[in-house]
Image 1 (cartoon, rainbow over the protein chains, first blue to last red):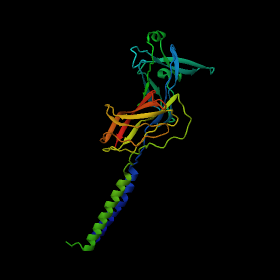
Image 2: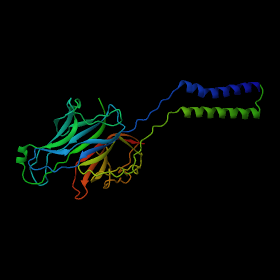
Image 3: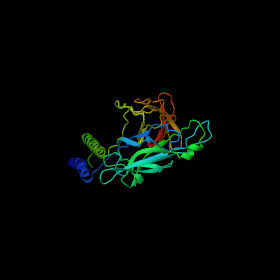
Image 4: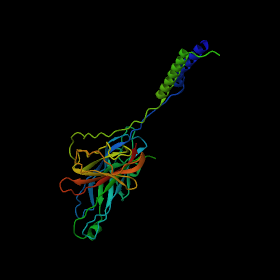
Length: 179
Length: 154
C-alpha cells in the first residue's frame, strides 16, 4: 500500500507540474492578417465631342480602403480599345492620358501628364494607416494622379466615317505585394 | 507478491483518468487559436449622394467559400452612391464561370451566391469578380471593372 501511495503522489505531482513547466518554456504569439478591402471609383462614361483632341473623363480613386500596409499595394490595369461601331467599318484610335498634380516650393500647383497605353498600370501604394495613397507619376516623384483624359488625334477624327462609336475602358484591380 | 485489492485498482483507474484529463487540458490550452476570417457585411451602406460621373466598385483581396456545396452565405453589393446597376460574375483563373448575379440596383445586395459548380477545399488565386455596369434608364453599358482576388474554400 505504501508503494502504491508513493506512486500516486508522484503521478499527481507530475500531472500538476507539467502545465507550469510547459507554460514557462513556451510563448505562443498569434496574429491575424485581415484581407484588404477597398472601393475602386472609376469614371462612369463620357460623351466625347466630335473633333475634341483631349476630353476629361474624371479620375480614378480608391476609398474605404482597409487592410493595406506599406508594401501591400493596389495595382489597377487600364484596358481599352479603339472607338468602334457595330455598323461602321472605321475605328477611331484613342489614348488615355493621366494628369498628375504637384506643388512648387511656394505652394502653387503644377501639373504634368503622361500617356497611358492599354495595359498600363497605376499603383496605389499602401500606407501605414491601412489605406492607400494616390498613384505617383512614374511611381517616384511627388506628382499625384489628379484627372484622366481621352486623347484623339485630329487626323484620326478625319478618317472616321459618320456614325456612333463607343469605347469601354476596363479597370482591373489587384492587391499586390510591393517592391 | 501481494495481490492488488479492488480498492487499489479503482484508485489506479481514477489516477490514470485524472492524469489523462490534465494532459488533454494542457494540450488544448496550448494549441494556437484557429485563424479568424473576415466576414463581408451584406448590410447596404447608409444613404449617400449619387455621383453619376463615377462608379464605385467594391474590391476584396480574398473571399471565403464553403467547400463541396453550391449555396454560399456571401452576398455582394452595389454601393448606394452609384447611378447604375451591376451584373457581377465570379470567374476562376482558367476562365471557369462560377456565378453570375442577377441585376443589382444601387444600394442593393445580390442574393446569396449559388455557385454553378461546387469547389473542393483549397486556395484559388487570381479569381476575378467582373463588374459590368449599365445605365438604369436605357440599360446601355458603362465602363466596367474587374477585381482579382483569392478564393479560400474550406
